[in-house]
Image (cartoon, rainbow over the protein chains, first blue to last red):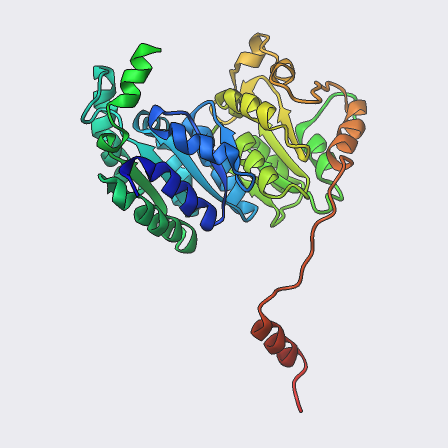
Length: 176
Length: 180
């Protein structure tokens, strides 16, 4: 599988693990995965106005018996801090797939502080962090994370390295 | 009930004979209101995550489209998650109702004025976000029709299947009918 197909692989894992709801705040790195989720009749893709909404969405869906995955970029993790307290207190399962900003290839220096703090912020709020730095690890890491989240009722964030997203999407963004 | 709305009476009326209604209560006074109306396993009262009551209701409504879902929250809580009205407006779940008990105050922190005290109209925001129905009620005579709106929305018949684990089915039958 060529490295560029990691979003397709993640989508396959989510579908196979019966993740029925995917909440997202768009990120260039998640462009392909968001499109795949919208195109999948078995997944309800829910655009959010802020990442915080994803926590309510996922908690409510779990009360109803459904698994949710949340897609966001690392800056969005900063919007979650207080509501992650509810995830911890109630031990809600939580699966987040976070594309990193502020790493290699970053064109916007304003992304650096939150990018550097992402893992620490998540850790401080009791969310386990799994970093993925190569496309070949993506699917297996997500599969393990889905099981941990929903079988063991843990909160997990999988951080997708900016290296995997590549400079291209940012160049595209700059040209738009 | 008097003509003036009293929160405990309104919430009690909305939750009376609730049947299979699933309820999410926003933190603070509305959680106490829902509990005062009669605690239920199918009420999820939030003690935190301010701003997330409506979204929790949306998640539940999307997960269980065959059930009716009611969010009861306060104006301060709703204002903190104003964007969620837009998100719900996009999803348009037919089985979700959001009721805001709007006293124009932050009740748990010293009764400071919220934005609604200064004219921000949450029902108009919901309407602008694409909610199919949105209204403000100010008189107890309007509670009955609100209750009907919550409870009498079309409900899809649930798909009910028995467990498919044959060993489980056999064993539970034998456990329930010992002897032989």
